[in-house]
Length: 303
Ligand code: GUN
Image 1 (cartoon, rainbow, N blue to C red):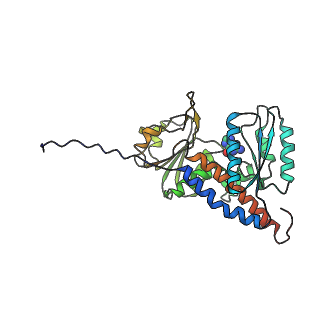
Image 2: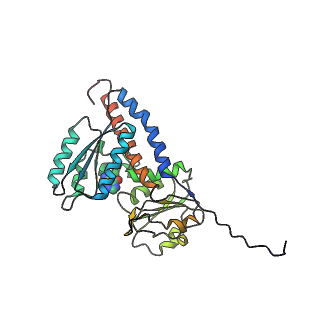
Image 3: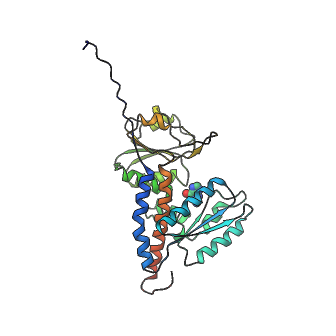
């Protein structure tokens, strides 16, 4: 033994929040509900509308349909050409709204250029809007009376719950103020008693704000934006970003390797939030079918 001791540098890597495994468990837990609905005469059914030939959207829709099949939810794919007009989409949606055998309607976004997305979303019957994008469902969430919480925000919250993250009193920072992710995530974190700050492209000294976060949710769509020096040691980091690099690699908004050495827990991309989004879609579709069952009452009317 010499008198000198080697200096030890202890680097503890964050634990990985395995969205793929958690989503698989959520899906498995949904199967008894689908079976019970079937026993009550209801075949839980999701209609997925895809207009155009965006390759990423085709992959998403395929994954959603496959996940439906896995838990016993029937899916109906409505495939439309890129030249589809707003009026044509409204016609399709009116038919699906009127079809009592369809419980959930999902219109895959983005819609082709020239289509008025807001008008199309507004046309979906709120009680079938399993994406939670209809203004009535957005408003219900903000009013503290949620019906369908949109799938990615719901998935983020479920990941935090499954990871046993204590949100009450926590400082949470949400990067991104989109209507589909940033804003609803901020509302849900606030409802869970976190103290929430929403950052966006005009935020000054972003790092100073993100370093206050016990829980950091990144949803801006900028690859590797969140670096290790922007993260408080021990923070829980949820990466909602899905960015395709020119190399073809899929990365999040967080510099995963760097931030893993600082955070206490982190979601990977892929395999973090993405699988949860689909699991929450299935959950919402079952919720819609259950609502149909209870509105049917004892009359035994068709689905
Ligand atoms: N496109 C990308 N993500 C989504 C989503 O969650 N729902 C819909 N409808 N379209 C999307």
